[in-house]
Image 1 (tube, rainbow, N blue to C red):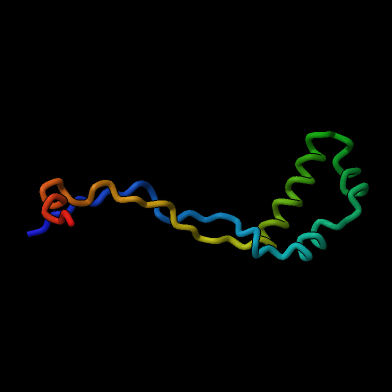
Image 2 (image 1 turned 90 degrees about the horizontal axis):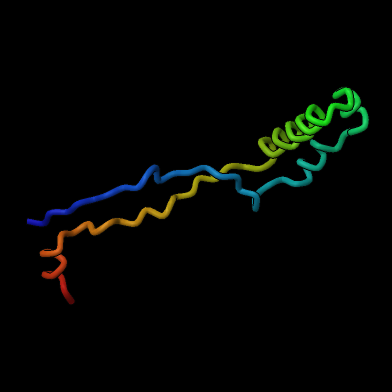
Length: 90
């Protein structure tokens, strides 16, 4: 009889932006606007201007850069006990 112990570290799937597959022409078009007018609506408040710029870029990235699912490095921690490992010795 073979007995194993399997250990998992966290979730094996993680979503990240796949910058290699991004549509940068569409992103450029998305953020191409009259920034003077855009910033004028923020009443020259630095915080509001920064949030306006950041939100525009973030929403453009969500539209133009796809997500990818990557597997995390899921190494097994000694799936076989020492006795069985000795019996398998090559």
